[in-house]
Length: 480
Ligand code: NAD
Image 1 (cartoon, rainbow, N blue to C red):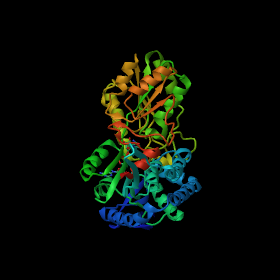
Image 2: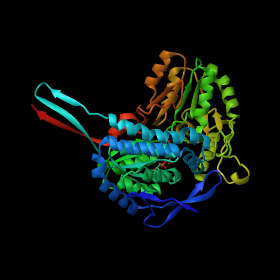
Image 3: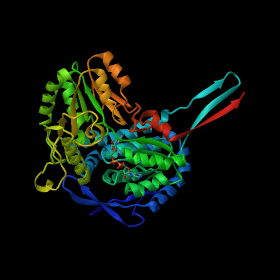
Image 4: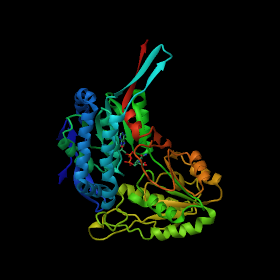
């Protein structure tokens, strides 16, 4: 059976404790590889390697650093099919989706920051002919990057690429549920000639290997994407150590459909925004609010379109949805469907685990599920489900839609469907979300600030924001 290895000091290594965890293919429910069950000893080795690499990496001319990162980007592109297949087997997502979205985005993350770092500049302030201040921006040191399982390589590289481009050395941990493409990335980094110790990838459990990264006194910045509860623990642990923190956390995103919308587009994109990647996207539009006059028409068209979504083998290009990432997560989603029924919800479609046949008979599948008749403030409508489950709710006025939309503790993303320009701007300004899409969903420009308000996180990724995060600002004042 394939054994994944840590990537420490430029080498693929066994974990110090020689212990491994099972890695399961969610499409079949079978163990197909083993993951290092790393602990604080492995994290210490990774920190030692990063520390030794930092003096030369941090002062390397940015164009040289950029060249190495561009090589990694090119190698991701060259291995696109292989990486997409690995991502699909590891995560359960359709392989066509990994080919079209996940892996190209991982390639682009490296490309974007390899070139972006060249353009990072600093400011100067002249003080009324008496002094000149200029600001230095220096790499912060060793950065800890921890990512979740839903978009494995996509989100892992979204942190690592800006950290490396800014001149930091990195100790990173992918999710133990989806470690495979991070492992393949370490092979590509070796091939690209990334100097040893610049990037170290430690595999293993969150509360063990992950916690050791957060608690390590020599790791000065933490970039984390994952659940809000984990983020809370990280904030509590890291704050007394004065670590710089970027937290990208959960979401419960409103999708607001007004009667004057472009109907076909709104229906089509609302279905994609609800069920893409089995609904396992932090930006999923899981609460759909529909203006009353349009409610029945929208519901019918939405359900008709959902009925065409085939759930099946992730490796089959005809499957629109694949497997849920793990048995535990499938059970969590199913428990929320039960809760929705107890709360008085009416299941409009789906609502069940799906049992496929043959080699998929032990896999984890759930039908795309839509529910109506629930109040906006019940648990189903307040808590993140992170699966193929959405609720439909009618509203009468803008104020009511806003009240519903802003009622959760989350504030990640929101979508507004309307052809009324004034309304679109009005709603965008009042929606408590870090990311607003008007007449679209998950339309990304990597230069824009990305992140959430309220319990959806602290800080923003993307563009120069991420490069700045991994640097320390120093003001130098010269008296004239
Ligand atoms: P999770 O919080 O369980 O795990 C995320 C990562 O943190 C994993 O690598 C895990 O091993 C690690 N971890 C867990 N406990 C830790 C600890 N005590 N110390 C250090 N590391 C620890 O989240 P998940 O289940 O993997 O991912 C799903 C969540 O991620 C959802 O809430 C989703 O909304 C969120 N998410 C947010 C964004 C965003 O950009 N805001 C993007 C994707 C996913």
